[in-house]
Image 1 (tube, helix red, strand yellow):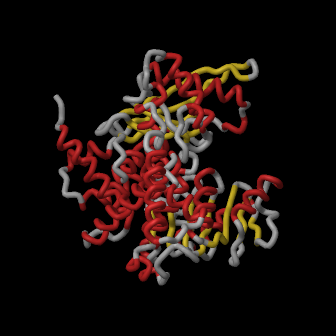
Image 2 (cartoon, rainbow, N blue to C red):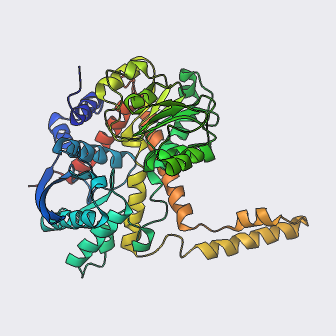
Image 3 (cartoon, rainbow, N blue to C red):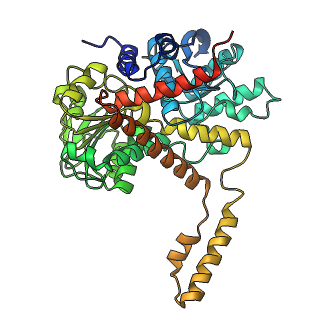
Length: 472
């Protein structure tokens, strides 16, 4: 069965998992359906001419408040895509125990065709439309960056919201992914990629899972191919190399792909592209041009990381995937038909609704910081350092041996905001994987991690609906 759309794939994943939950049909229908979609057309004057901009905001589920989800700028944005992404956000938040309902927004433009001032006009007007319909607010709906947007756009959204709500002391919580100087949180930019790394590492630490793939336990020494060197892909690759000991042997970008089975330094590849505008001229690597860039999906490797857009592995190329594990860093990179083929071939897929939840997890931390009006670590950092220093001094006094200055500084270091954010993200991704994996091993009828992840998310959301009841 071929997939007609991204939304259809999400629906098929839901339908495959629903029978394993034991929930009644009516409750399953409520969990599956998207609660509300706001379609907007608004005029903006660009270069003296009026342009009508098409945009959306979807709120999939209100079992928790506020709803949460990114805003993407792309000329491929449409209502089905936004609804599908909002739906995944609900399940994603449930899996990692982040207390939000799912939402998503999109503006149908190619952001690279507009100047910075024009993008600011579009962003502020879009935000104004959301404010008018009460589709944004720290207790209502909290956007974040997605494809084509970043901290700059989030700062514009925050400023626009604050202008309309000057008396809202929690206004900074209306959007996450802001610059640190504008009430953002340290570690947000790398969050999704770092979460992908933690998730892959945790999967690689499961001896029985690795035995099935014929691989050794642990992430170190494994080969990785990354599709897309945007925010998520670049951070996944660099952190996997630097902290996990992974060998990056292939990458792709819009201009094509490169491959070297001996591996290369991903930092050097990123620098080369920044200097030359392309990865294709990177020395020592086999290059595949723009028309062949999907060949990256068929490179020989242990771990394939699709980190670009949806529907990249489908029924046409899934049979040619040579990776032993596919780690979905992007949203919906594998269609339902493609996933079925991978499952038949024994390829392990780490599903997007778990693996790229690092972004929303750290967005949650930023939202909490905005509501508390205090930087993480501010109260306890120096207190902890003083206590650790006393412990070191006591050890030296008792043993008569002096600890080196390097070791001393490592031991007495008190946690900064970035340390606490990374620690919280690591704990979230480890706990999230264990919840999925336990269900996967417990239920004989569940044959893959994606079905286990969807079943876990559906069950968690159902608990809220059952506890809250239906009113009136």
